[in-house]
Image 1 (cartoon, one colour):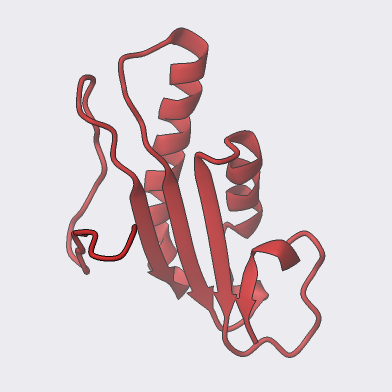
Image 2 (cartoon, helix red, strand yellow):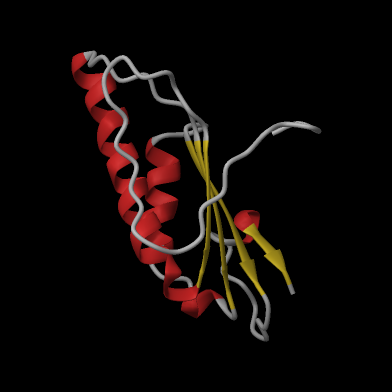
Amino acid sequence: CTLDSEVALRVGGDFFFDPQPGDSPVNLVLIAGGVGINPLFSILLHIADLHGYQEGKGNRHKLGTAKLYYSAKTTNELLFKKNILGLMKAFPGKITCCFHVTQQRSEICKELQPHITGK
């Protein structure tokens, strides 16, 4: 987003991402904390499936980017972190993530360091 961009937010409840062929591409910003990652991880997997299908078969979905912001107390509490790193590696520039930890006392592993903010 840029200054003065219009954004839509949704907190809680039933939600999903189901773009249809021919829909205009959208850029998603997904924000999760702790176990709240579960439904958003499912959305990321769906986006990855669509990107993979798009690259392999030239489907009609027009996809934007997906950026995940995910916070937990420590890196141990970041669920699906290895899977998320794998999605970012498989779809560079299309799926990105920024992890935020608030109470990390131990050193952060090198694989996560480039994607971690916080203490």
